[in-house]
Image (cartoon, rainbow, N blue to C red; front, side, top):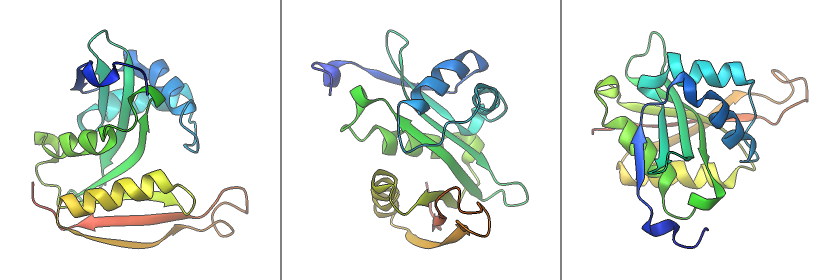
Length: 169
């Protein structure tokens, strides 16, 4: 972690299209996250800005990003697509703070469940969502969402669906 990072204030806000390239670069610096196209990141930051969050240092540097959306036809479920935290901002619980902050937004007022998908080897994401489950005093269920062979033709690891809830914020 960057010396003095703890003394720097981090500000949360809704992302905008102007953040698209910075989001793309941040995600690319956070293996094992899948990098999407810059265009995809532009859509995440604009079309899904109400259910996504950017974390910036006061100088404007992007150090965290969570993309999410309320699942169509299931307005009680927020799907967290990606969580990225810059190496310099790790170890402060920033990922959990970003997701918690999202849940407090009016755009998530009807959310009672959080879902995400995680590969078996992404220990950081498993730890984050287990901590969230504990913090929210909600159960965590896991099942297969997309199978390595059936859905990815062996080209990507199985994505496990993690469902937390019901929650009250």
